[in-house]
Image (cartoon, rainbow, N blue to C red; front, side):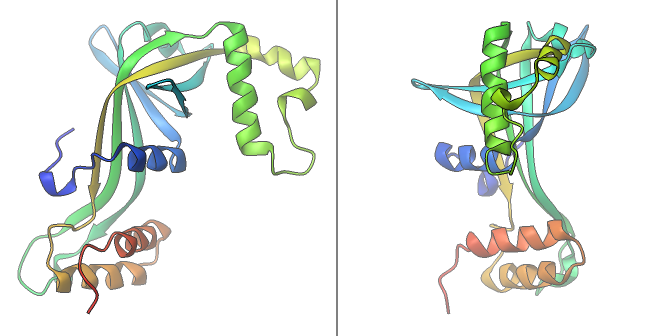
Length: 205
């Protein structure tokens, strides 16, 4: 991923937090030179000094058969159009966004590993709910549906992170962009405004 120096993020803890907050990712592989992709809920785990991404495909999705190659996982955060009319001087429009690319090698899980991963996934998203659909609460019939999916894990080998949030703008323009985004009628623009506000790089005053 091309990342200008103003927008490159190298803090691993910050990237991990981003991934955990935006865990519905895109996994990209190739089949005979052609890129193919699937959008999936993914989980990040740390084992010793290594990080792994886990998830599962529907068995009917042939992409799982391509996991013997290097893979790319993409995580996307909120994004917003930035008008050049918001600047104090003539310029061009742009787009603000957050994106993380993970490169690694994938392997398939056995059924026991997949079951343990599903338990963790259900616990994360169900534990706070009344009558939670946790693994131990599922019927035998529901549990048998594990036969219809294929689990995988990806050992993280490279992380590329870009947060393009107008860090290259002066204080006046930066603050103007925040205020204008807050006035936009879509949640993504307002989320970008909040991110910029939290990451404000200028001293108050």
